[in-house]
Image: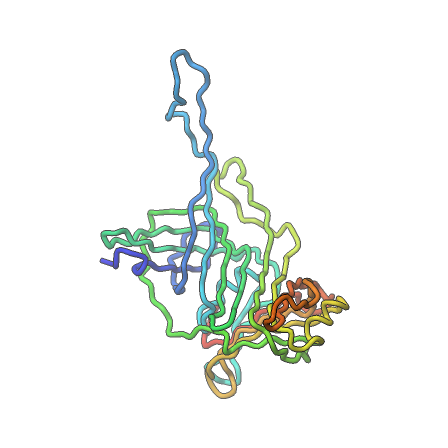
Length: 329
């Protein structure tokens, strides 16, 4: 029996070969899954002499699905599947210098075909873990954020075809890993490939959205959605909060509306040789929005600059580089 509270919960996932077809979870993450079932109903029943309440026998579920958010820290192992589900493409970890370090390069591509089974183990008070298995999961968006004294966190937005309670709970097994955090972070701005670290950054966020068609549902699919395809511009955006330290770094770029390349990286402990656990987001063309710095109190002037990423015509609009000891996604 498990602990009859959230302490006994689990989250696991696996890539699907066929959309919406169950695959037993083999990847387990320390996360909080707020995934729930959705349903749309139709209530039938016309006017009938003496009937004062609509008939329960005429209530029908006409379509259903599931979705929600998965909240995690960004770990030094095990993030490849989610990154690939969001950004798409074919990604193969590349061994670094004959060591135990492997580089994954996730550049913005078409995520079609990236589907997952996700399973939440939810304990009841008696200690029985109830499996809620979400089929045909697609990663719609993510927001990475980090602030002073905090970890690098990720909020993943998920849409699923269906949820099942008939699958067996997969026994969780967690890798030994680290979490990326504030002390490991740096923000760099400048020209592509020659970005330089800027100082005064207090917090940072990056959001990546992959808008998709809702997949129906269509007649003949028992009210279930089909896999959604991209149907809108992908959005790369975020926000930088910084003390007003160097006018040229942020305020001048905002005032001139000059684009800059942005690199946000976290470098952790060494894996082997010169290769360290690394999580790096690269956006080669960003424009700063926000306001001119103002002094509104006796305190240090703080600035906040929302930003948006665009395509420079050459480099992928966003790339995530992930160095870990994972041999596979």
